[in-house]
Each structure stands twice: as C-alpha cells, then as structure tokens.
Amino acid sequence: MQINSWAALLIDQLVQQGVTYYCIAPGSRSTPLALAIAAHPNTKTVIHFDERGVAFHALGFAKASGEPAAVVVTSGTAVGNLLPSIMEASQSFIPILLLTADRPPELRDCGANQTIDQTKIFTPFVRWQTELPCPEPSLSANYLRSTIAQAIFRMRDTPKGPVHINCLFREPLTSEEALIHSLAPSYYGATFRTPYPEVLVEWASLFNRVNKGVIIVGSLPYPFPLKAIYLLSEKLKWPIFPDVTSGLRSQGIQGNVIAYYDLVLKQVDSIKPDAILHLGDRIVSKTVQTWLKNCSSTLHFSVSDHPFRQDPQHRVTHRLACSPSLFCDQIMPYLSNQDSLDWLQRWQQYSQNIETSLQLAQFVTESITEPSITETLNSVPEDWGIFLANSMPIRDADLFLFPKDPIAPIFANRGVSGIDGNIATAIGIAQGLQKPVVALLGDQTTLHDLNSLAQLKKSLYPVIFVIINNKGGGIFSFLPEISEKKCFEAFFAGSHDFSFVKAAELFTIPYYHPLYLSEYLTIFHACLENKKSCMIEVVTQRSENLLLHQSFYEVNRCSLIPLLAR
Image 1 (cartoon, rainbow, N blue to C red):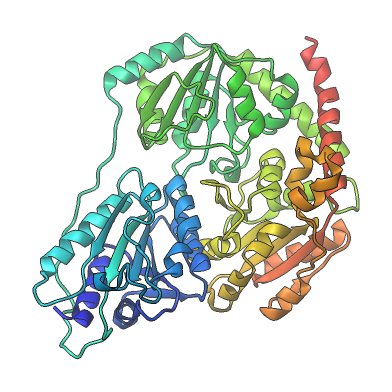
Image 2 (image 1 turned 30 degrees about the vertical axis):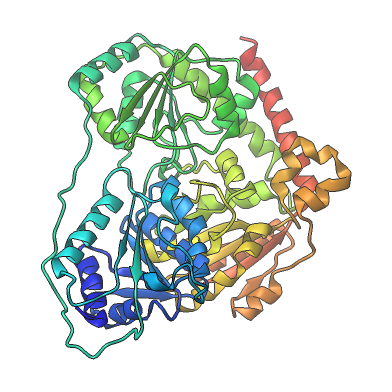
C-alpha cells in the first residue's frame, strides 16, 4: 500500500470511529495526513501555526464536547511542544489522539535534519502508544484497521486520556496510486464499572451510623448527571461542598449545597465530621485540603470512575472505582433516614452569615476589585460557557462564585493547573460546546498564550476575554515569601508594565478598558448581548487585592463568632 492510500485509510478509520475534529499545525512531514484529512468529506479542521496552541485547542474541544479531538503535527520540536497539553489531558481524563509525523528509521541517530527519537516520548502521560511503519505494499489494511480500533478503545475506555500514534513517512510524501478510501472498521464495545452489592451494603452500614457527614464533590466531566448526588445528600442530611469545577455551581445553589464553605472552614476548621464522602476528582480549595489533613480520625470515602488516587493528604479509608452518579443511585436502597438535620442546618447558618458579611463588605464600591469581577460571572447565561484560568481567577471563583440561579457551565484546566494554553483551551471549549464563552484570565496567563488569539479569526463561536492585569503573578502575594521584598517582585511576581491594547489591535479584537465597576458592568453586559469576541482589560493592584482578601477573612471571622460561641 502506497503513502496516499495508507494515510487516506488511516483517517477514514478514525472518522468511522467518531474522530472527526482535527487540529493541525502545518508542517512538511505530516503532508500525507493533512492531505487525507482535507480530502475526507466528514472532517472538521482547525489550523494554527503553534503546536502548543493547537493541542490546547483540542483539549478544550474534547473537554466541552465529550468527543475526542485529533492533533496532527510534523516531526521534531513540533512533537515536543505537545507535552504540556498532554500532561493536562492525562491528569484530567480527556480523550485526545496524537498523530505525529516522523522520519523513517534510517534517518534516526545519524544527524538527519529535524529528526529525534519520538517513540514513547509521552510515555508517562498517554493511555496507549504505537508506531506505524512507513507505508509499503506488504502492509495489511486490516493491520491498520485493528491498530486504529485499539487506539480509540484505549482513548475512550476508563480511565480516558490521550493516545499517541507516531506515523513514519518516507519521501516522496505523495503518490499517484488510486486511493483506498474505506474499509469497515473494527469496534470495541463500551464497558463500565459497577460496585458489588456487598460493598454497597458495607458502605451503607457505615453511613447509617454517621450523623455528622460531609459530601465533597470535586471535578466532574461535562455534562455529568447530578441528580443522584442531590438525592443522596437529602437522604443522609449531609451538606455538600461543591468545588467550582464540579458542575453543581452552574445549577445554582440548591438542595443541601453549602456556599462559601471555604471561607467557613478558614474560621471553623476545628469542627470535624465523622465521615467524608469525596465524589469525583481533585478540588481547588487549599483550605479544604488542609482541613482534610487534620481530620485524622474521620472515615473518608472516595468514589471516582477510575483507579487513580485523588487523595493528596492520604486520608482515604475506603475507595471505589465507578461513576459517582451510579454509586449514589445504587447505594440509596441500603440507606436508612438520618437524623442529621441539626448538623446540616449548622452549616447552612454558617454559610448564610458569610454571605451576609460579604454583601455588606464587598460590592458596595465603585472600585474594580478582583472578587467583584468574579462575582459578575453570576450573570453569564446558561447558553454560554465559562472558562476560569489558573492562579487567582479560579481561586477567587472557588471562593466567591455561588450563583442563586443556573448559569453557564464552568470549565478549567486543573489537571496540572498550568497557565499555558489557557487562551487556546477557551477557544476550543467554545467550539466543543457550540456556544460562546467568557474566559477569565490573569495577565501572565494571557502573556503565556498570546499567539493563540489568532485562532479567533476562524472560530465559529465567540469568546469574551476578561483579563485581570495586576502587573504580575498576583497569587504569589499570598505566599510567605512576600516578606522577602528584595527578590519578590522579580523572582516571584514577575513584575511587568505591559498592557494588552496593542495585542488586541494586532489580532483585530475589539478592546475595552473600564476604569470603574459600573463602567465594567455596562461593557460586560453589552458584550454578552452582542455575542462578539472581544477583550476587556481590567487593571488591579496586587497589594490591594491581598488586603481585600485579608479584610474578608476578618469580617467573616467576626460574623461567625456568635455561632461558634453556642
């Protein structure tokens, strides 16, 4: 089989297996793949000059759509540039297919241009990997079909994640033969884990003896069925602490969900439950992690749909690898009604007092603050999406974003929590959702991925970028190292004096720079209504933001003193 037929059959097998979205960085050695993708009638493509940006776009698309995306690059450093996104996809359980083009074996280890050893380059971070040999007549089409079927199964099976196919091509990179366009694919059936009845009986008997329990809901894939979690909480009368990436925040505060649990725990961390049920994956709140570490004698249950630990404090006593929703549904018949109403109401009262103190202390001002910018996300409609960049944006959202009514689904890159590729991810999420997106970014995150703004030119769905520019890494102001004034600004904060107005001009993006909160609100809501991509840059002061957070903690402490004295 010659090169054109080989590439055409490869892409057709992928399309028949459901991989139709291709993110391509132009290159020479990947020519056979690019031509096959372009010729196939059922492919959609995104072309971007930066491999890192194109891979993060694929990550965002797969995260929002639930469907895999393919990344196609040439050989050499192009492959190395994929690593950050693959680390994130692996830790976040996002299905991405890597198609990397490569030189033939005879050009390895001999000084040939743009040639490195690409085999197993992503070993710790992919679910499966293989290398396809250079196309030649003796190669079987069935071998290619079987290989693609295995790749797709390993990418989609639990635990989901990236797979890597390294494709060797010799020159010439095109041929004149008649193309083999199609071959019936080989399919793997879907599988899922379900808990054994005896495990459910054991866990239920423990739950039935607990009056003071807490349900922590960590990151969950979108979309995720949440009803069973609410029903379990109602049955047990256990409060729910919903991480900002759990999906529960977007539903509005309902049921036994406790808002502002992080701010409560900063003041009442001495109050320990008898049991903790952690559903889903990682959580943003460092306060909760510290609290969990101190709950040394507490029963700690963990349920996630994969075998990997979600237990940085090493406090989990009981684990299950299955869907949290399935678990909640299947354990219900074994539970008795709990007499935990006083415990639940106690947490609800804590949260209500925090909310009241925030309303009095926070938003009655004309100054633009980072928490007040976060609070405006409560008005993003359900037919949008929200992307939260790492560092301060997602931490402020975890602290303050508790909408009363349903809002847009919330996304973030919390697998490895990097600031790279966040712009590309947000644009990919918009394409995966097929909805517009509001992306809340910090200045260093924006600088890190500035060239991905070029993707907006061909994006079918707009993205509003709200950039909080505090002239450096604001999150480092919260660390003890700030006392070392001599080196803090240069070595931690990464201070700069950049503005993004020229960047918006370079990429022809409408730009706004409000100076007051009322002006920002007017611009923000107008942009939501217009549904056009734009950039809103808000300048804040790191030192003022630190003092503001410290004042919140003090106000909240005072608001809880009467309750703690009971």
